[in-house]
Amino acid sequence: MEEKARLYAAMKRGDYVPGEGEPEALIDFDRKWAENEARGGAGNELDTSSDDGPDSDDGRDEMVEYEDEYGRARRGTRAEAEKMERKKRNKILGQQELDKMSARPAMPSQLIYGDTVQSLAFNPDAPIVQQMEELAAKRDRSATPPEAKHYEADKEVRSKGVGFYTFSKDEAVRKQEMDALERERAETERVRVEREERKAKRRQEVEARRKEIGEKRAKKQADSFLDGLTADLAAHDGDNT
Image 1 (cartoon, one colour):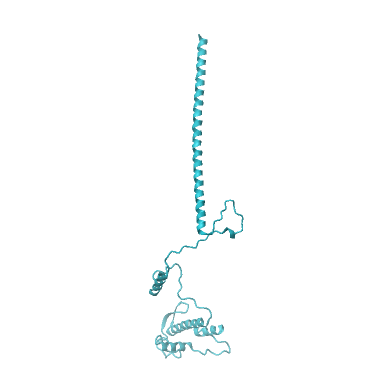
Image 2 (cartoon, one colour):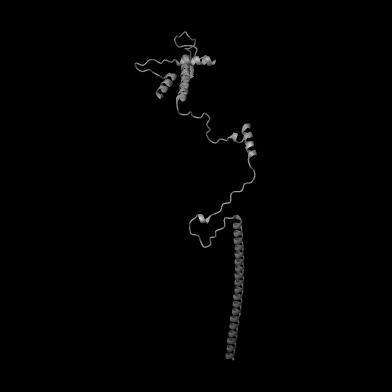
């Protein structure tokens, strides 16, 4: 099937060359295209004549510029230009036939490349807007609290620490247990603050006492130094007399 499709496309493009002993192509694609265009009512003005004789159409030997199947600019007779146009059209028709016979899906014709803002997402069509409004009207707008889930220690086999506490699965009892623990925590925090305050006060008292003792010791040392100095001066005066 693929080989037949390839041969069919080559015939439509005009590229088919029969081998030795093979018959010529049985389908005249130029005539077939002209008949199709004539039935369509348009586009048959370029292919209403044949290349059988020089007198079939006036001006076919006129030199004109045209574009070949590869997009290159060419210069030749009008007949060659028309033949090239038919060849390009046959190539397009052959490719369309191949796409129809192929099991491979065709590439989408509308693809988006690069960064593009989807404007329809902000400005949808009227039917879509109506459907969105109907869905919004059916939606339950009441607040739905999530299901209360807690850690279940009895479902996990592992060693617990000394401070581990298993709360009750009943929400009311669980709240009472947590409130009791919160009160215990507040009491522990209060006792800790009071202990820290007592420690700070005791530290201040010790510092004040140490400062007072230091001042008394310095005063005593100064008095002892002055008494010794006075005795030395008195003894020196006695020796001089």
